[in-house]
Length: 290
Image (cartoon, rainbow, N blue to C red; front, side):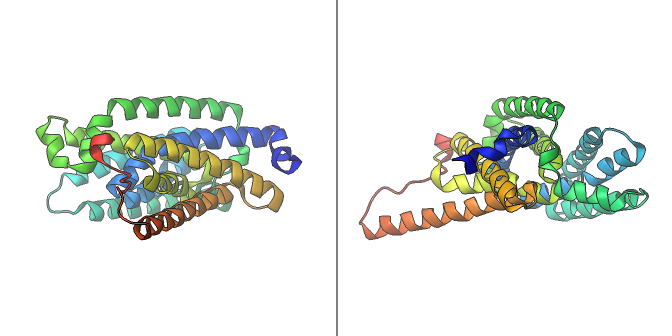
């Protein structure tokens, strides 16, 4: 029992646990829509698109979070604007923004004397360095993400399953898409200093994808995703403590492992269902129940 509890008797590990759980909740709210709409590439592009703002803030001695927010806003506006260009596919626009922002960020970071340290922290984060004020920021971010998810749920749902129906119902799909991008940006900004931009997709995508076979609706996916992310955070910090591995990477790797475990068990369940005779299949995502 001491093996399970000893790491969490240390103050900085406790803060890391609370920080990871808050990030898991935020990522569950945004990541569910990322998975349902197939927006993983966009999530990756936006996470790396934070680099210019973060790098410039570090170079000028400013607040890294404000720099990340500025870059996220630029990415959100850029993706929204390019998405309205008929002659350019959305993937092409996202790819161009991805490369452009990442290149600009590396150019800015290269002007810093602490290039390697800054870039490593940006890419991989430092979950064990979470401070008390970081927890307050994450708590506010979680409340904002929850508010956006509740207010925009109907529009997001229509946008995910039938964008044309969203237009017919007067739900303003373009505005809903921009709001969804803002929610995604919020999740990435809140998470990057915890697990870094290279690993943020682990908490953004893996928990909702793991929850998908077991939930009947969008809210169920979000709840299970938050639980899965919290489990990955607890288990990752525990393994990191005892195995002396990088904490953020261990958390993200465990989240991905839980995804494969979930889909493996789901496959076994479906095979058993087929061999036991006809039954009513469990449909995890039916829009009318979401």
